[in-house]
Length: 390
Image (cartoon, rainbow, N blue to C red; front, top):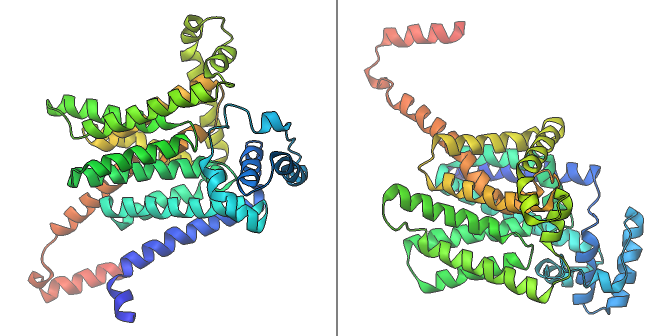
């Protein structure tokens, strides 16, 4: 056992740092903020309903729990019939058994497990592609972020949505190595599950489509992202159409017109630049005031896009940003990165690019140093004296 640990000390220390920082971040969140938010009432009520309670009984149990957090619970028809959250059935389905066994905190426990799995998967992706040092750096920033821990660990759908996106990316990389139809089917399944977790699939669709288009443009041929982009984008669009048809009680267009203070779509589109600037300015101010780690992640990711524009990681992030902007601007309010969390993995791998290059350049410098065996005893003595002075 000792030999195994010694031979893999780098990997062991990586996981100790990542999981340790996740634990510290989670405990810090629990001590400062509640698990329960206004959106949580819908997921908790559905969890009770899926666990075997009637809708009336599920509402009563949700009201009993929500009163402690001073969160009002709407009537049954709105609680289970609001078109915005009505399609979001995956998280309540996963939480149904824990809620049956442990009550409302079963939902919190389910989200905790999801957030932990997401953290492990993100770390493994970063380790495999960029090395332990880069993985530790990026995940420390993620785990120390106030906003990310709040949205990922609360009774919300963000961490599960981010997990589906990361799994879609992993399946896509597997498809690059082994062109099999069942991997494309699995890719479509992860997108469909994401669509019924949270309506945010245009983020991953935008990422894949831009990776395909920019990659094809630069390579002057059909890019390898073509089939994944087609599968992901068509699945996302199909799910959106189905949700609009079967759950029509929420209109994103009406929300957009309301926030833009416009009477027509044309007037609303004219207002988009001003709305975007207000949202960005508000979010930056929030990050500067209470979440520097998240701001650093964003700035590193944007630096990765600029410095390594030919890399697919940069293309993926550009597409994800476009998808996020679609949701955020049509919603019309600052969300402090919440709407971008389904595309968090794209920020992580883009932020890893400059860190990975910096680490590689360091090793190049070390490789150019003289062979220690060629250094004379006199040089060793001088170097030792200099080290003691420093």
